[in-house]
Length: 210
Image (cartoon, rainbow, N blue to C red; front, side):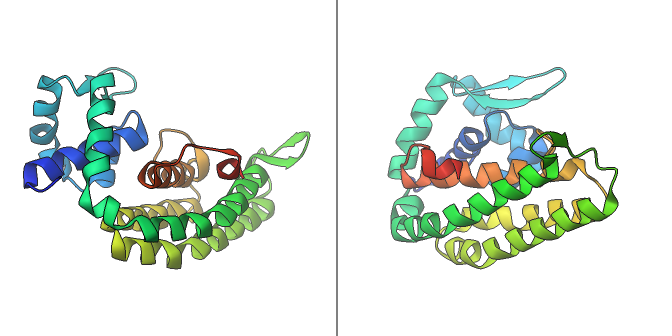
């Protein structure tokens, strides 16, 4: 079982990297709850154990090795907070799927004005309407996600990040809507979805694709 502080820290970091894939320090800190200034101390032993690798260059960050993925699965199966939240996780999953379907439609409208017309973001009125739809979708998620976070606190970390991304979109930062590797609303939503799939022991299926 995950009991000691070090084991919990290891789980938090490995789980966050499994959710994200490749995570820079800012995203890893936000996902794991580990302050950015403490990440090196948390990551260095995992690198030494061959569980994590660090990448430098144009897309720097940390990611799991195959051994790290295996160790994560072991720890996830034994994490008392996750196993104890099984009922809440499954209830949230059922509520999440229709909201996720709505979210995918909003993203499609952001990218395409029609089947054959991309959205070039030259029409502020159109974009404002889609952003309003994004805000409505976010509002649908807030209550069930808060309820899940009451049982499994790590899911509460998504709430302020989604709100911050929505705020940036509303302030005119279009990239904060769906740009990959930008901590965009879409990025954070995908992390939440992946965390949910992992935490419920599911495999991604047609229902998850909306």
